[in-house]
Image 1 (cartoon, rainbow, N blue to C red):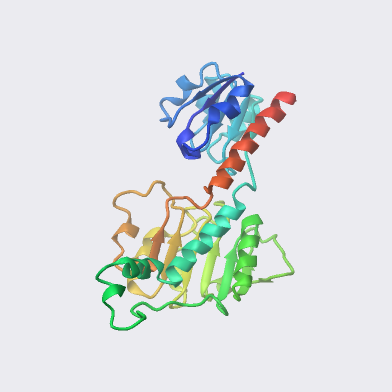
Image 2: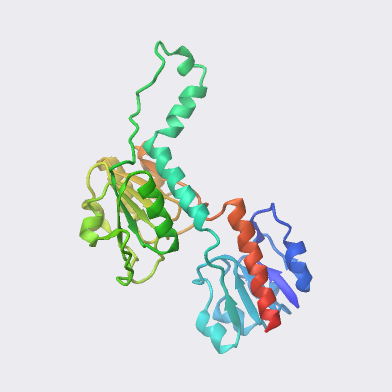
Length: 310
């Protein structure tokens, strides 16, 4: 078997991919692959490993792939219909990043609620705490999570764990089902109108016809003053230009690990926000703990092993 990894940089440089995938046959790895390089790099390949590189109908018809291994959960970068017609097996990996996403979600929330960056810099500065006439600094307010209305949008595997942690913090937890099919007796299910009345709204939903632009300009205008919107799901669910304006117009907080177009473009409206203490942007890292990436690679190897066993 000839196995080609198209975007090894998305998996980190702290894992020896060759030792893991080389046991299945010839293994070739590229750090990154532009779309005009994909077909050439997959000539003679039986198996491709891809995280974000597109495997289009054109790629499929001009190569002889037998297995497409997506080193992620989402398979929106694969032309599934073309793969099916060509009798190519497509395998993804699910459930590997739950703990990582949950942890990063609350790390980001707490960083804003506790003004962590400000107080850390103040504490470490020779012109800060060291010159204070009193033992404390109360320049920036910090807020407890306890008793806040916390809504999870998308109560799947990750959303459910986020709900449990929020409950442990003493939040009043509810959820909104984006598919309208999810039901969990342990948490209150609410309408979208009720979602917009919550103190903290945490998105853990896929991007689909039910969620695209769910938090549009009209919905965002309905957020209460002091509300915090957190997107750890997918870009395209939140109107990014509108939320950027809203952060400066009202007391609204926005945390996002995902954007509609990634990486963020240099002229993105979020980069022009003046009230930066109400904004946190992380570069799609919530899934990427060392443990999660290790599990992802192990499960990808198992997908290849299972395929070879038939």
